[in-house]
Length: 401
Image (cartoon, rainbow, N blue to C red):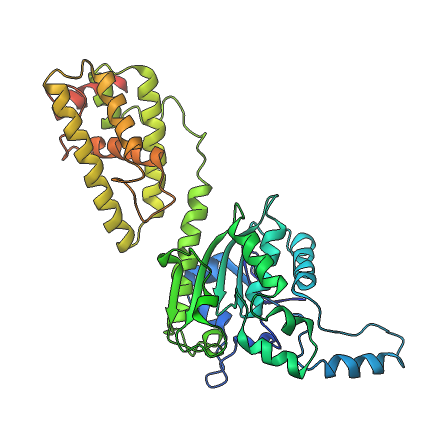
């Protein structure tokens, strides 16, 4: 069942999935009465961009409740009764809800605690060969390789959910294998409680996970899903991850086909290309690259983003000056060749020298950054020798009007 906590017709939906024997109470701190979703919603950006819902399913450790309910149902007209079902069956229910109840959402974020994370993974894998709305997965204390405690549970109860949580069960092995070999998987962050008592630390984070995708949280298995207040590290880090997600969505929404022949004609970077008599095809491409970079600059605006961008611009500037030196020494024959070589070198260096933490910034954006620098008249970046003066550029600008 999908139960909305906050519904404001936003295009992004966060779904919380509880674990074994859990419920919506999984996300509530008993001392402060704060809930995980409500604490996220205290942030204005989250509030204005995300709806939030719980996904609830039946889960009972001893199977007593389902047996009693089943007996009662014999004397009622409604013969259905809740019972423990497998992780795959639960994920089937969730995927049906996504397809037929949540079709208005563009993007879905799954936050799974304990077994809820395995349900999330199984649901994600159902969409692996088709378009998926699930774009982000937060794994909170999830036993990706199973939990030793489930082994002891087998002595107490015959419960398919407990059975599937055993270390190296058929379900955890299958999930791990499919996940490792999967493609088009959503961005995933793994929250690991350093005071865990249920999930082994090697189980809470799959093999070959990048360090930047692991968050070590000073909580235990239970408290990690029950933050006390907005200052809890679980809340703060989740908000940062969600805001980064929004930036990436905005990058994906950039219309890369939108650029007119006349757009940017009066910008200094275009005038510098014209003065240097650079071929029109390169001028047109440079306009597109500039557009991409301008769009990126409007998205990545935090202090940390700006520091990263500052370093990136400096590296791109150094590539330009090293290449321009070849031009002035006559080792490069023309301005058209100079621009082409600079563009090529930026692409060549994109994955190493120009690598950046802002993963959505690609080579096209970086090519545009050299033209952003050329558009700044405090920078001596041009494609002719000698460099044009501001008076020359402004004279061309007036004539173009």
